[in-house]
Amino acid sequence: MADVRLVRASKSFGTTEVLRDVDLDIADGEFIVFVGPSGCGKSTLLRVIAGLEGLTRGEVSIGGRTVNDVAPADRGIAMVFQSYALYPHMSVRENLAFGLKLQRLPRAEIDAAVEAAAATLDIGHLLDRKPKQLSGGQRQRVAIGRAIVRKPQVFLFDEPLSNLDAALRVRMRYEFAGLHKTLGTTMIYVTHDQVEAMTLADRIVVLSAGRVEQVGTPAELYAHPDTIFVAGFIGSPKMNLLPATLLANTAGGAVVRLAGGAEIRTNINASLAPGAAMTLGIRPEHFIRDGEANRVETVVRFVESLGSAHFGYLDLAGLEEPLTCALAERPAIGSIITVSLPPEHLYLFDANGSALARPRSASARDAA
Image (cartoon, rainbow, N blue to C red; front, side, top):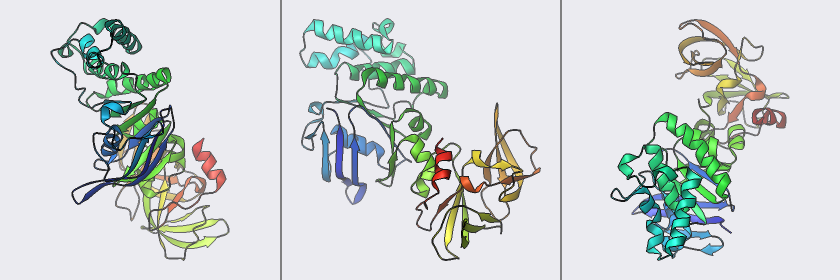
C-alpha cells in the first residue's frame, strides 16, 4: 500500500502560515499533481510529505503509517528535485548506484537495479558519462533513475521540467506518463504549469494561499470549477471572466448586464436579488462567430495565430480587458466582428467567487 493522507496539515514559518488545514487523500498508484501560482504552498506541501519540513499541526501518513516523526530516509519515498542534484564527479552509473551503496546492498543487486532503471529510462548508453556530458533531458532521466533504483512507495517530483526548453518539456511530459504506467507507483508532482497538470494528472490539487481550492480530474476542474479562482487558473487560454450585475431571474435562467450595458441571458438560476454583483464566465472556444444568442459587437485588438488556431483579443465596450475568443479564421486588426455567448456554455460566480450550479445538460456538453 502506498496511499498518502494529510489531515488538517498546517505549516507556519514564524507568523506566516504557508499551509492551512489541508485535508487530502491520495490513493495507491495515483498520479497527483499539485498546481497553483507562485507562493501558494505547493512545494512546501510536497516537502512536508517528504519529511523535509515538519508540520506545525496536523498529520501525514504514508501506507497507513503516521510519519510525522519519521525521518525522510525511512518514509519509503524518493524525491526528484528541479536542480537534478547529480554528483558531477561521478559517472551516471555511480550516481544511480550511490544510494544503494550507502545501504550496503550486495554488488550484484546494485548492478541489477542500475541496469533495470537504465533500461526503463533508455539511458543505458549513458552509464559511463559524467553529468556535464549530458543534455538537460538526459540529466533529468538520471535523477529519476536514482529515485527508481530505491523502489520507493511514493515518488515526489518538485517542478522537474522547469529547467528544460519548451520542446523538451513536451517530450518529457509523455515520458513521465509512460513511466507512471510502467511502474504503477504513487506519484506526486508539483508544477506551476497548468498545461503539465492537465496532461499528466489522474487528479489535480489546485492550491491558493496555502489552501486547497478544489481537487478533481482535469476534465472535472475544466468543466465544473467550484470557484472563480479555479475557473481562471485551469485552461489555456484562460476563461473569460466578465464583471456583471444581476438584472432578473426568469424561468429560463438569470439575465445579467455587463459593464458596457450588454444584457446576457443564461440558463443558470442565480437565486439572488436583482442588483447583485456577479461574474460571468465563458471559455474562448465557446464563443460563436455571428451566432444567434447574446450577440455582442467587438473590435479586434490583437490576433495570436498558432498555425491552424487563431485567438482573437476583442474589445467590448465597458470592459477593461479584451475578450479572448477562438476563431476559425484570422480577422484584420481593428475590424468589427459580432460574437455570441451561448447560454449553455456560460458560468456564473457570486460576489464571493463561488460558482453557481449549472444545468446538467450544459455541464455534460462542456465535459465532453
